[in-house]
Image (cartoon, rainbow, N blue to C red; front, side, top):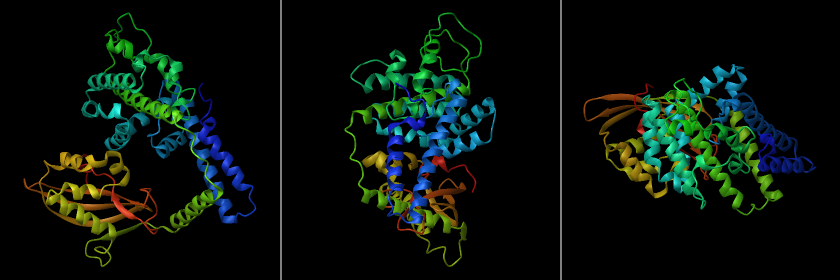
Length: 403
């Protein structure tokens, strides 16, 4: 069974039901009713964006997966680009190293995918080096092996029927999603074809009958399919869990009150920039934390560096986080640094400009992106109670980029 619309997903239906119940309560203040209305609009925004994406790009077998940047996708759809321009813009999102690696990170949550992370990282290197043929073959092997290991029924992705790829309560379960795109994935290709192709014809590529597939479109569709397969797996896990207890009215009121406080803080926020030498600069909490992070880098204290990284990333990697930091930074011998500016670009985001000096005599000015988080690791406006954490923690995400 596939969903005709993202609005048909069980989680969407349940959220709308709860909000309708809240709106019916006469205890609500005007401000609370406005907050409920805002949440309803956010749900509509998400569902409409997914449906419009599939309407335009679904016929070209592009799947909407959970790690796609929803606001960027909405902006592209609102530009009214033709389908070719929209496809090129979507590929450009994957071609951004920060974007792609942000999409890759959650794959570690799945043990069968985590085992294959070394191969995924190789595919990442091949993709940005323009070795699309290599990237495609590696990702095809990863997704086949992952699906084969994920369930007790030992069959790779290519051996599955489209009906087996229904994803419960997931955007990849849309009727134009994973099951729809699977038809070309497994399409038999017996005769040799030397014409350029722009679909992920797995069987034809693997068996050597399709020859001219070495392009960024097919390589990006391989990434797109990998992330969709991961979403399918997460949906299977969620489907087998007992349904969560419905939140009480008190819990919903608490959530709305929190959203209301965040909304007020966002409305009051103004962008600002602080420079070294200003009185408030050294007292800024983010300035203090970035100094601690960079001091730890100079001292090669990778455990201390790991503590500064965003909660989402640390929870994802658990006890392995210091080891990952060491692997990323061990060959970068930082000797000194100068923090020069703090630029608040959003209520929960600031960019900190730093001049880095290395033992080999080289230096570089970079922007470190810091995110303000609450106790649960969720981004909140910096005027509320929380702490700054480093978001772009790997040196590949900020090195060789000018401030």
